[in-house]
Amino acid sequence: MKSYKVLILTAALAISNVSACIPDCWAEKLGYPCCKGNEPKVEFTDEHGDWSIENGQKCGILVWDHSLRCVPTIPEEPKKTEEPVKTEEPKVSQLYEICKEQHDVVFKDNEGVWSVENGNWCSIQYCSSCTNIESIDKYGSLWSTDKTNGNKCIINNNTCHYELYKNCRSALEGYMCCKTPGKVFYRDDFGSWGVENEQWCGFNEKYPCSWYKEKGYKCCTEIYNNIELREKLTPEYVSEQDKASNDGIFVKINGEVCGLPDNIFLV
Image (cartoon, rainbow, N blue to C red):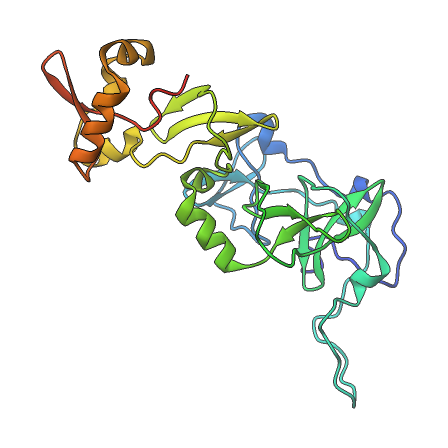
């Protein structure tokens, strides 16, 4: 992290009351996220503050109170030594406790990933594997649990991200896929949504409404509600139509053909 733009962690100082140094995301009160980048470009300013654009979406730029001087800066270039310096483990993180829980607010610098527990800095460890991805946070980081100590950890592996996004469509929207079939609580163009462990999860549908719209077809749920569809269709007929085409599940209702989303018969 750069000195004046983000909070810096250093082993030379024991930090107290660090929560006062973390600014609130003022943009969330207006319905927008705060920018995730370290140095977001100011695109425009209004009465609320400075704004930028990330991934095509407006985001608020956090305001840091530099007068607090929470921690000193870390030199940009390390001092040269005659002996090579091992960098397998971050030196600074060894002097801090390891975070036990997953956190909504995290900071990243050249020493690792950090958050705050009980008013003190803690170091978030990286997971050794990605065999059990549990959640996705607002930064897009994947979280799991370390099997050896039970602490929450971040998966720092691009292959894990790629495999998740390839096999779980809802991960593209920031939500894990549902692990077991269950009740559909909500449907939109992106697909069907359920709830597991008090968190939204996505049913990994092959043919959501967005699939049909991209190909120029009508989606059945635009014409009929779920109850009407279950009254007019049978699982056997839907299964036959599913096998009949590789482009979707096309059914005929009252003489009109429409595309049927997956899992339409989940209650």
